[in-house]
Image (cartoon, rainbow, N blue to C red; front, side, top):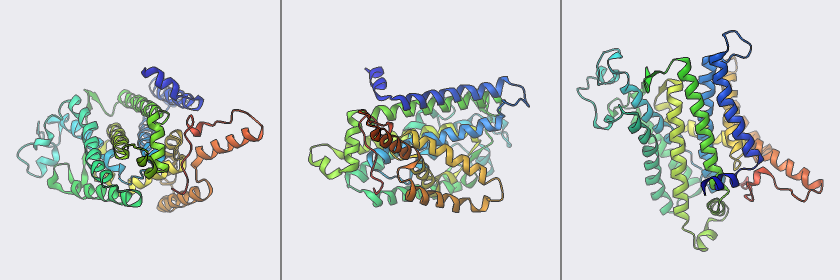
Length: 389
C-alpha cells in the first residue's frame, strides 16, 4: 500500500527532483573523498559542510511550505522547532566530549564547570545515548507544536494573529535560552564538538557522510510531503486553506487536520536542526531569533509557495546569495537586499520562481491546444494558493 501511495504521488518533476538530490548527495562526497586536492572537480571539505547547511535549510523550507502553502498556516516561529532539534543533537555531542574538554570533567560540559555547577541537570540525562537524542529531536519539537497547536487551533486563532503568537513563542524561547542558569550554555550556546557516533566531526569522511544523510533526509521529507498533499488528506488541507469555515460546515474536524500537519511540520524542522548542528559546529540562541523564522518564510515565497520543489529551491538560492553577498563589500546591505527581494517577488512573481514557471508552462500548453494541460504546480489536481492570502 505504501509503495502505491508514493508512486501515485510522484510526477515527472518530483521524480527529477528526487534523482537530482540523490545524485548531488552521492557525487559531492565522492568528489571530496576520491579526487586529489587541486583537481578541477574536487569539492573542498568546507564546501561540503556549507552545502550540507543549505540542504538542512531546504528541509526547514519544506516543513513551512507544507503548512503555509497547503494549509494556510503562516508560522513565523518555525525557527524554534529547528533550534530545539539542534539543541537536542548538540546536547548529545556535548556529552560525547567527556574528559577531553578544557576543564577535563568527564560528566559536566565546560560551560557548567565554568559556572560552578556541581551536578548535571536532570534534563541532560540520557543524552549520552544517540538513540535517546534522536528520539528527543522528534519528540521535543513535536510535543511543543502539539501543545501550542492544540491551544491555538482549538481557540480558532487564525491569520495574522496566529503568526504573531508563533513569533512571540519563538522570542520567549530566545530569552529563556539566553539565560546562563537555564543549562544550555547561555549566549555562547553549545560548541567545541568532538565526535558523533564515535567519528570525528571534523574529519572529511564524517562531513561527507553527514551531507549524504542530509540529502537522504531531504528526499524522505519531500516524499512524505508529496504523499500528503496528493492524497485525500491533502485535498482537505487545501479546502481548509481556501475556505476554512465552509470545510468545517461540511463536517470536517478542521482543528484536528491543522494540528496533525503542524506537529508533523515541527518534527521535520527538528530533524533539519539536528542535521544542521554537527555540520556547522555550533548551536546558540540566535537560532531562535524571530528574524530566522521570517527568513525561512521568505525562502518559501521566493521559491514558490505551494510547490514543495520551489520551497527547497528557494532555500538554497537565497542562502547561496546570502553567502555570496555577505562575504564582500555588500555585506552591510544584505538585509536591505533580502527585504527588496521579498518585495519584488511579492509584486512581480507572486507565485514564486517555480510557481511562475509552472503557470507559464501551463499557459503555453493551453495556447498550443494541448488537451492535457496539467502542470506540476497543480500537484495532481491541487491548485496553487491565492497570492493575496
